[in-house]
Image (cartoon, rainbow, N blue to C red; front, side, top):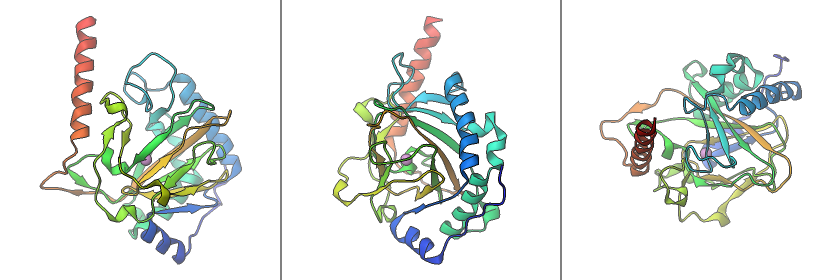
Length: 266
Ligand code: NI
């Protein structure tokens, strides 16, 4: 792999991220590395790696459903392939994160997930803030680096952002279809007319703050759209009084019921 490719971003880019809550970068890694990552990526999804441990599941459907997966996700692919932490992408993403969050790069850590949007039937990702999914006992200072392994266009479901939305609180979210067994959350009342669409060429990535409202359309092309996302930042701040996120409790309850149902059948 080419380990020589280092990205430097400008002060203007840092300011733009801090003002708007997202920043797209034309190039964070090489074509050779993307090609290599595609091989690992396909292997993970072909194997449905980690399904039993809850690492592979469909974001777009009910947990443990039996039909076709419309938005499959893999959590923590670096556990299976630790070399993913040694990539040009990972290294550059850490450097850029430190600049954007204005912290020392030695304090930045994190890990990845992969979201596959199948061609033709890959489901949309509705408006949400990533922090809505996270531990309500912690105030995070994190961002996501979103690297597509296929061209990300409006038609294939690239990301869209609401500028400056990271300055607000985490808004109310609910589960898609109002079903707590569907992991995907949606924030209602988002003014999508404000959205900035961010198509990304191969080798590029988009960084967004954990409070930035974002969404992605369905994949209307006949090509899959693979994305490898890193969530990075310094340690969060432990809260005395947790945030109220009832949607998280609803999901935990629904999953516990599903488990006890499965246990009673076996
Ligand atoms: Ni997200």
